[in-house]
Length: 198
Image (cartoon, rainbow, N blue to C red):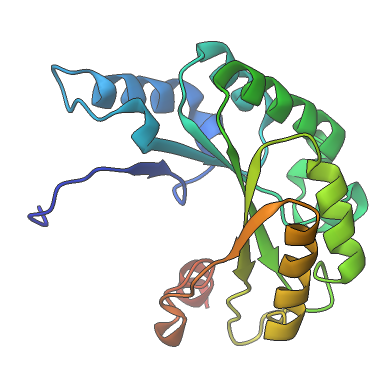
């Protein structure tokens, strides 16, 4: 359709992939099949809010589909406020599932962490996050919050984001501050739906 070849597929943004697990896994098998699309298995990523049964099912498949987890908080109290799914699958359960996935696949896990000013971006939060992720091979994406008019949260300042990243790096947690795209037209991550619903 675009005239460009598709070489990576990420399951995200259309609902939680692991709540439609059977269809997601079937589509991966079809797209990976040499007689079909023939896309290499390491060109697939599943992005989850932390649905533990789906992570464990992916681990049991023992195929190196990449995994991305939206974390956004380093402790249960804060994460439950930001992400209600944490009440069903608290961090201890989630971390155990991630260890099982990594043991089965040997693959590094991407951790998505939204940076919200005064909410989850303190130096204490950075140390908590490093402790939580200790022992896992991870890559942390620090994502500046994309605000919309009337929203309850504000973006972390550049200084707070850099200080957070510096602490993680010092503690041997690989991380990167995500480059922002689309916020000038309210089309960045997290903005589009909010604007459409107003």
